[in-house]
Image 1 (cartoon, helix red, strand yellow):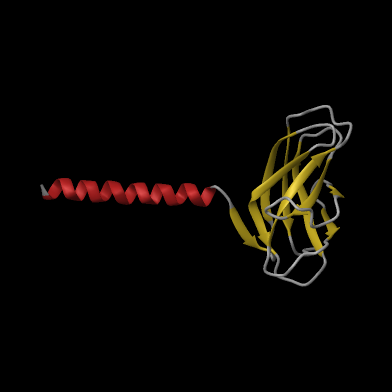
Image 2: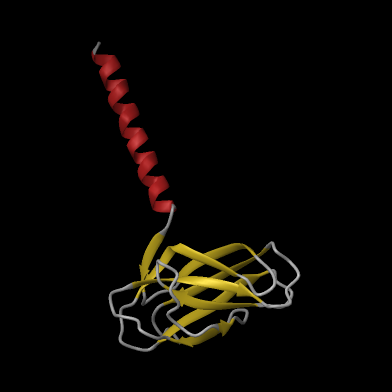
Length: 143
């Protein structure tokens, strides 16, 4: 009987560790002093937007700029990025992404210690509805 309790307790512990690992991988927030990496998948063409509210950047300074850097792309005509809130309210100007180059976006109505997220749009003439892009972004000015 004692052996069954030990096996049951070990199984429960393993289950809790697995559940914790899944919840951590479901999204995260990093300090604005470093980049958050996000993969936007299946971005709709024709200038449409893909939102990500799982991976955030917590603003830690009083500067009025966010940073965006594209590290992978598939779109023929490029993508643009913008800083958003969890409820998808726009919090920066939209900027055209450039491969491996930091682009600053002027923020509007942001607050220190608040977490922000990213949205990516396709070019208005982009024919594909299945392009992916990986960006690094921060609610702070990292340039």
